[in-house]
Length: 127
Image (cartoon, rainbow, N blue to C red; front, side, top):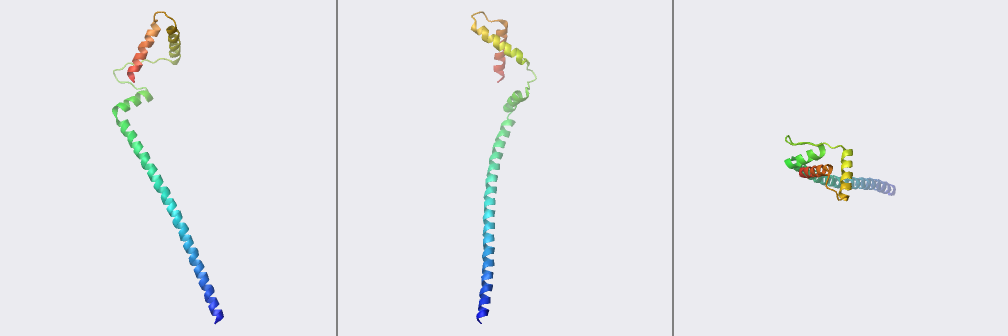
């Protein structure tokens, strides 16, 4: 009878250890699922915030004045009744240099500086 109780005890220990291993595995799996869930919740919150900011940006773009401003700034668009002056960068630099030197002198304004002032006034009215 002693050897039967030892066998039963060994079987019970094996079953108890298998049950313990199973529960440890389930606990680890549950913790992993909880961590994944928290990560997904955080990602959903980030995406909702990004979505809200994109909707705000879309509302601004749909605003006609904002669309006009972006068209002028990014694509150099003009209204049908407007006239556009294209000034090469080299000429603009020369004009800026001459304007700076003419401002230093006490002479009457030259035609180039008058033209530059008109250009400056024209550009300031655009924005």
